[in-house]
Length: 363
Image 1 (cartoon, rainbow, N blue to C red):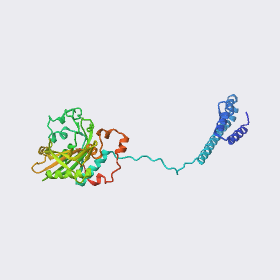
Image 2: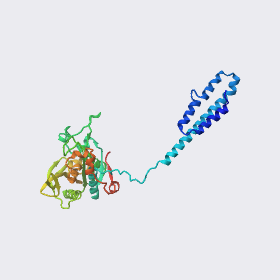
Image 3: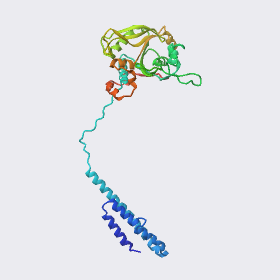
Image 4: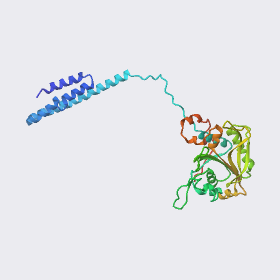
């Protein structure tokens, strides 16, 4: 058997001279590979006597371990040198201007909801919330809507399957149930607005199956139509930013108010556009009225002691009027080009949590 010390010296010298990882790998294969010199020596142990195996076996294992360690050390050193060379030769020019991303914008629905909420909280209203999946009682019965009313029919309302007791919940058709929940859960007086999503089975340029409303409710002693008229006129002036806004009230009918009225705002139509506050035409913007005595009785309030008013409007509709948006369906089309055109920067107003109390009406 060859002089193992001489073999070790030769191989380690070759490893020290290896200039790259490929050379190191070739040395490993030629010495420790299947047909390498050290591997062939290991095979010769089988031909030796027990005494020779006892003498040369440990020496061969020591040689093999020494060479494996030397190979790994040389690989690590070459890899470190290569990395340092790469780090020293490559540079990032941090003086270049970064690629600027386009800023996001506020959706018109969010914008109008913030504006409306800001206006009413300045008048002393609080924001009330409630569930979008409603019970029949809160959505219809408590609001004095009779069983045979068209709003209860399948072609107008989204119903859920019957539960075990035969009751069917609905996607709320207005935010009026929030008013009922507020009056049943809290003590009067009430001065709230209820903004949120509502659902009706309808779809065209001015209607979508899901849309947004805000409704207002004021209940106290000695509330009358004059308070209602002032509140609506003040809102219209601030929202449409018109000092001398023209408002008219037309008699109408709603099951939950008596007397009831439709509210029209003065406008003109020019070149296919609606100009609010100008001309001799009129455009309906909301419905309103004094809260029906039956509604007060349904929430255990005495109509002889308390009275009040309520009104409601579509947030999508007044957004269309204020900013000249022609088709309501575009609000939900997820078209970034549309949003870049009609989007807004964030309003610089305090958060609702600091401007008004939030009433959770989901009990």
